[in-house]
Amino acid sequence: MRVRIIDADRVLTGTGELHSPGTVITTDDRIAWVGATEAQLSDWRGHRVERIRLRESTILPGLIDAHVHLAFGCAVHPRPAIQHDTRLAVAATIRRALRELAAAGITTVRDLGAPRYVDSDTLATTTPPTRVLKATIPLTIPGGHCYSLGGAVTTDSEIARLVAANAARGAEWIKVMVTGGFTVSGTSSPYEPQFSDHQLRVIVAAARDHGLPIAAHAHGITGIRQAVDVGVDSIEHCTWMTDDGGFDFDLGLVNAIATQQIMVCPTINHEAMTARGRLPWAVRREQLTVMLGAGVRLVPGTDSGIPRTPHNKYAHSLPTYLDLGLTPAEVIDLATRRAAQALRIDHSTGTLTAGLSADLIAVPGDPRQDLTVLATPILAITAGHLHYPAAVPTTEEYTRR
Ligand SMILES: [Zn+2]
Image 1 (tube, rainbow, N blue to C red):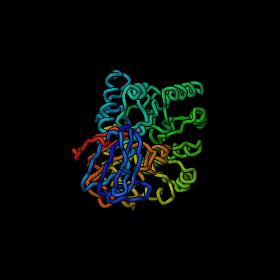
Image 2: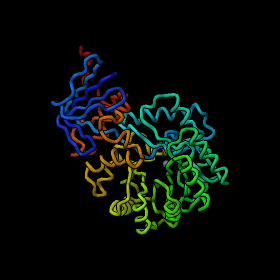
Image 3: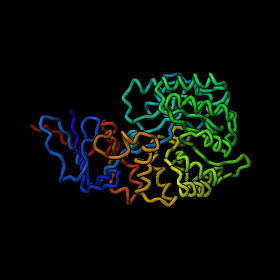
Image 4: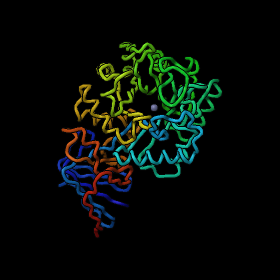
């Protein structure tokens, strides 16, 4: 058994506790103990013990980005035909994304769409430095949003076949393009639904047959309403945009989203607050503030992998949520514990609790005072695998007899 003892000025457990100075002890891939440094478990006779002392820093749960695309590569002009990229090239893009995420202290991501199961194959042959909940191939219509990923379906049997194939390839979520979108090819409109109500119900039923939750990409209100009516588990983007350049924001529908406890991932990247044009921050901020006030479960995600959205800028996106009236501690909670709950993995990650996966980061200073320190992690551990993203802390290795 490999024992690691990490001491820091502060440990934020994510369950409301603060230990200062605090210590986290991990054994192999699990958290074994969390508490005040002076009270730590000390009898590790017969084990290899690695001790890391971090000065002027805070340990907290690893960050969770609820919406990424490992396979997309962030190109400013994405090739419309990702299907023509070799599997080797896409796999290399995925591996690079995983390294960038791990180095940025993001220990879990939900990958909401990749081509032709390259994600499944790549993740199966490596130990990913970041935990990935994958949706594999998103369902769309022929010629629709992201059709080039290989997920165009029309008939009931095509839907059932693709959902079954995704499940067989280890999909943890089913992603459906309820409306059209803006990036990565497709001829359908972001403001209008792609599928009929019947098709969408068949998709939801197929996902349920395999016990999988459904993530619905939706921009315009008709698509959002369709997603709520069929009972999806998360709505991605949820921008309420209309084709005349305006917005159709509906409080009744917001309340339905809250009542049905549908998670909303608004895909806020590091540039959201300076965005002009189609999604100005003033409008977005108003929508999100009302949604939060209505009790909608907002979960941060960046859509990283799309143009201008690198994988390592999740922490840079989080101060945006302060502008919705949240405190830094509440934003940390959203990006860790509550994200894990919404993604249904809180039994294994999201807080520093004995027995859970050893997923944690350390940042300089105190993120409750200054959220921006999350962008400069000095240490990240995913399932017991150690990364030193920015600096090398003092490490002692010794074996106690
Ligand atoms: Zn996306």
